[in-house]
Image 1 (cartoon, rainbow over the protein chains, first blue to last red):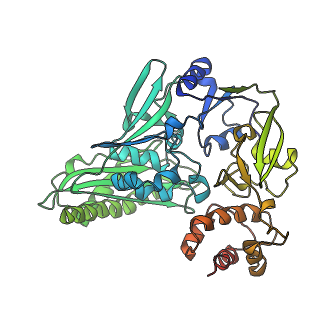
Image 2: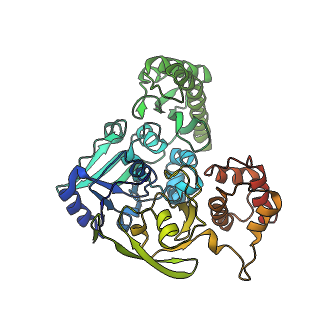
Length: 292
Length: 161
C-alpha cells in the first residue's frame, strides 16, 4: 500500500501551479487535503508522474460573501467551513450537510474543493452544490471559467476539469426567502460513504403551494443529480405531495449496484428518505416564511 | 517553488513533541513510515493506509488528522504531536492515558495511539463533551476489541465527567 514514485511539486503561487499543470497536464495529480486522493495514491489506483501540492497557496483559502453568493476557496477545510458563521447562516444546506462528511479526523484536513474535484457519486459536498445550483470556478493559463455544478460532474470520479485547469473556488447561492432546506443520508456507519443521500431546497408561497423545488440525489447514479420535479410546482406543499414526488423520482432513477446495496434498495431509500427530506424542506420553508 | 525528483532524498525537518528532528525522505514516503522508520517513533501505528481505520491519527500543526494520507516532504517545518509526547513531565501517564487504563479502554492496543491523539485534540476543542459528541468523534476510528463503550467512558472520565 505505497504509492508509485512521483515528483513532488509545491508551488508558492497560483501562477506557479498553472505552469506545473501546463508542464505535466494529465500526468499530474493536484493534492489538497489528500483524504480521497491519498487513499487512491496509496492503493495505486492513480499513478501520477507528479504530485502538485496546493496546500501552501493561501489565496485559495479565501472566502468572499456578496449579496447573492458565498465563494469558498478550493482549499477551505471542511472543519473550517463549519466554524464560519457567514457561510453556515448564508448556506444553510451546507451547514446541515458538513457534519455528515467523513469524520472529525478527516474534516479537519479535507477540503471543499477537493471533494468537488474527486467527484465521488455519493459525496455530500458535490450533492449540495448541485442541489443549490452552484458553480465551480476553474483557472487555466488562458483565464477563468465558471461551470454550473450540474455540468461539472460528468460521472464516477470524472468532471469537466481539463488537465491544465485548477479548481480555485466553489460558488454557493445564498439562502433565499421563504425557502427551506433539508438533508438526510443512510450509510453503514456515520461518516462512511452514503448508500443514498438526499437533499432538498424548497420555496413555499404564501398560498402554501410549492413555488420552487430542487430535489438532489447522491449515491444513486454515477454523479449527483437533481430530479425533474417541474410538474409539482404549484401543488400543495404537504407530506402527501412529498411522498408522491419521492415515489415518482424513485421509479425514474437508474440506481447503481454495488456490494452495499442493490438497485431496489436504493430506490426504496430514495422513496423513504426523499419523502422525509422534501417534507422537511417544506416545513423549514413555511417556518422561514412565518419568521420573516 | 519546491520540486523534488521522484528518486531524490530530501531532508525533512520537523518539530515532534517539542524536539527538532530531521531525516531524509523521497516524495512517496508516507509520514507514518517517516516517523517509524526514519525517526524511530514506533508509537504511531499503521493500519489500513487509506485513511479509514484511524490508527495513524496524530496532531499536525494543531489539527488531529491521518498521518498515512500525508507524505513526509509535505510536512517540512511543521509541528507534530504523537503518542510519545503525551506522558506527563515526570514520565508517568497523563490523565487521559490513566483513564484509558482504568476503564479497560484498550485490549490489543493497536488503535489506541490514534484514539488518544484524536481525543487529546477533541478535548482541547470541546472540554466537556457529551456522550454523543464523543461517539461521533470516535466514528473516525476502528477498534475491534473493546466495543467502544470503555473508550467513551475513559474520555468522559478524562474530561472530569
